[in-house]
Image 1 (spheres, rainbow, N blue to C red):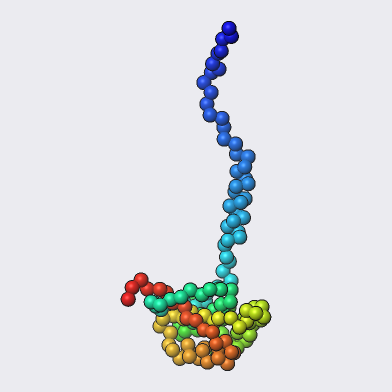
Image 2: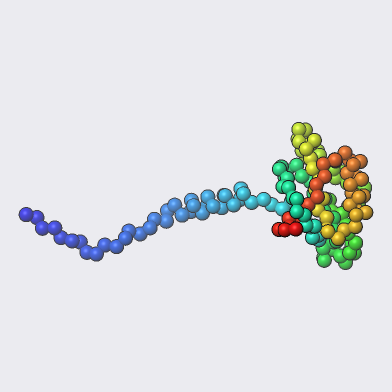
Length: 156
């Protein structure tokens, strides 16, 4: 009869780290794909007005933004504290809105041009005269789909 001997006290085998670089690269690839880069630098400060009946826009790729508000603190020395209009990455006047809308329309495909929406992100303290001037220029540019950005209130 054979005698079976126990071989010492064996512990758990070591964990293989061979697949660890693969996991890290998959996570890195996921974040690279899912992260969006900011396409504009904000040159104006604004606090969005509050609203109770808020709807989300369906296709954000069809939305172009016009920012209206006071210049940021770093820009106030040069431009003052009066509300300014920001189109893309620079301050503009209402006369430049026609060219802005035409440029944004050219970026879209032929089918999506009719669905293009202009979103006004204006400070809650901005005078209605500036908003009205912007809306008049949008009418001249035949940009009739206009939305107003707001922050949602939790109650009434």
